[in-house]
Image 1 (cartoon, helix red, strand yellow):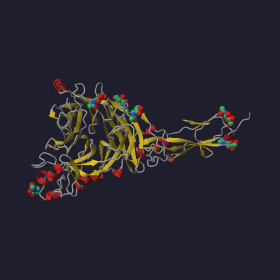
Image 2 (cartoon, helix red, strand yellow; image 1 turned 60 degrees about the vertical axis):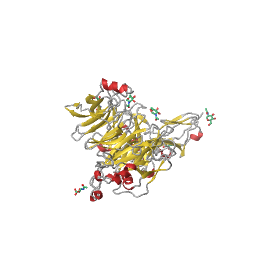
Image 3 (cartoon, helix red, strand yellow; image 1 turned 135 degrees about the vertical axis):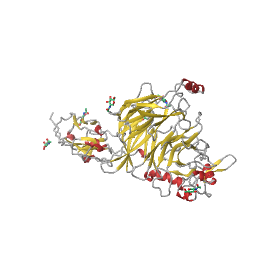
Image 4 (spheres, helix red, strand yellow; image 1 turned 30 degrees about the horizontal axis):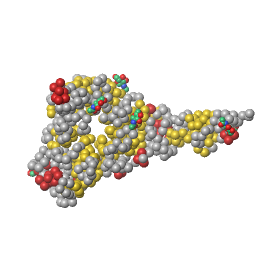
Length: 628
Ligand SMILES: *[C@@H]1O[C@H](CO)[C@@H](O)[C@H](O)[C@H]1NC(C)=O
Ligand SMILES: *[C@@H]1O[C@H](CO)[C@@H](O)[C@H](O)[C@H]1NC(C)=O
Ligand SMILES: *[C@@H]1O[C@H](CO)[C@@H](O)[C@H](O)[C@H]1NC(C)=O
Ligand SMILES: *[C@@H]1O[C@H](CO)[C@@H](O)[C@H](O)[C@H]1NC(C)=O
Ligand SMILES: *[C@@H]1O[C@H](CO)[C@@H](O)[C@H](O)[C@H]1NC(C)=O
Ligand SMILES: *[C@@H]1O[C@H](CO)[C@@H](O)[C@H](O)[C@H]1NC(C)=O
């Protein structure tokens, strides 16, 4: 037997390459998550940030809490709001479940101008509202017992939306016990609501409401708008089966209703179909949440709506993010054509584009300078013709398409439930929008759009699996994200840079919040560092990292027929290890085994003598799953 000197020179070479491979992102529980939950209390589905008081207000079933905005585990105050025995009995007598439905689910929490809060609960299928203040470290309900009809749903399971603008409460919910009378209503001062007609709202599921400051610096003297996102059964569909479509509707803030026609009803309610086209889907996807993103330094025309969509049928497990420009939506309402019903046969109605004459002022338009010039100072002055037109034709002809004509992100797996978006400036001084998306499986997906390429930074398990995220909020004061579910509320930092222990991992994560500090040798938050950091969000180029410890090539000896393990530990789970022998990429064989921390060569032979083996890493660049 003679020894074989095999000159296996091993060295490590970090490289940044794009692999076509679509690697899944690891989900892992994360340290530093603070949790709030109280024994026996469920359904933590309403959150209100009170940054002025350093509080997060949490609405749950039969209870409201005030916790520390910096650490939600610290409870400062709580107040119970339970239903009375009589209310529970009444509810049960109407056929509802006393243990679940006949309770008070807190659904509405808004801050008022005088810093008090407005609170509403389902109150055993008899919704009620109240005023609440936080004084001397206590939450106090005023027991005003205001009627909550039209503000808060009766049914705790029913989808609803609400928004407070300067003490005007806009709410989209059902007005009655059966849940069959949907409304968009503004209260309390001049109560204005939608017409109860299926052409206005047809079995809707309300998703969200947003206020848009369109009056600010408006050249035409336009009014502010309130946008409503929802889904409903299409009236305009020529189909046998019910088809659900997604919609955006809007009303003008100054709307006072009509004088005779549309008395106490919106004169400005217009709606349009929203499309989020997911490949290979026959049925339209359904909107589940919308987040209104505006840069405070830019006019409203730059605002965006980030929305999430899920399939109409259970045959697919894809969820999508679609992004819409506020300006595109607004243009459809202010310039687009209307749809009109035409009777085709005795009982069949077909909806087609209206091509006749449109009265003036334009139906559904807000009162602007042109209207004021014509002596119309308020909606009460609008002519009957305009009002009749909008009463019968609230639907626009044009379908609103997302930015780029397709979803920004499509992902397989747990359905998306909630979305929230934060803007952050990266080291390249560009602004990026970071999306935090809650799922049905208790996770939060963090994703960024890098010039059209959607990159998923991470997916974090914050609740036990199969527990849906019900609400998401974030605070710029604490840089924390808050998520509510049926079992509790968690708080997580917007970024946990310190999780990366190597420069490569830090850079390959492509998190715009994080960069590698050469001086301290740590992955740190950009916002907390004065030093110039290494970051490459656009390309994930890890070659920017300092040449790691000189990995000196080593000579290794081995016997013919012997085994040899060459060590190489990958510094990032986003990087793939590639082995090369004399510049030829190795693939696993019976003799070459790829281990987590190295390469195992079995039964060495003459051919191994004098070879050079290289271990290198390449960044896995994750592409959008759009190409599914
Ligand atoms: C409230 O939480 C319980 C317990 O997790 C859950 O079973 C129930 O569906 C929730 N109710 C609502 C209205 O979300
Ligand atoms: C938050 O508060 C809890 C309870 O007071 C405490 O145990 C925990 O350490 C705090 N967490 C942080 C991050 O300060
Ligand atoms: C509208 O307002 C103008 C100026 O305030 C006033 O002169 C005019 O009479 C008003 N028109 C109506 C119809 O009230
Ligand atoms: C939900 O989470 C569990 C536990 O991590 C996982 O096994 C399951 O595959 C997830 N479901 C989906 C649809 O992603
Ligand atoms: C490896 O062995 C070769 C030939 O014996 C020698 O020239 C070289 O310097 C050695 N390299 C190292 C890193 O020991
Ligand atoms: C090792 O390799 C030699 C030839 O290179 C072969 O004859 C022998 O069968 C191999 N042994 C094993 C256990 O595979």
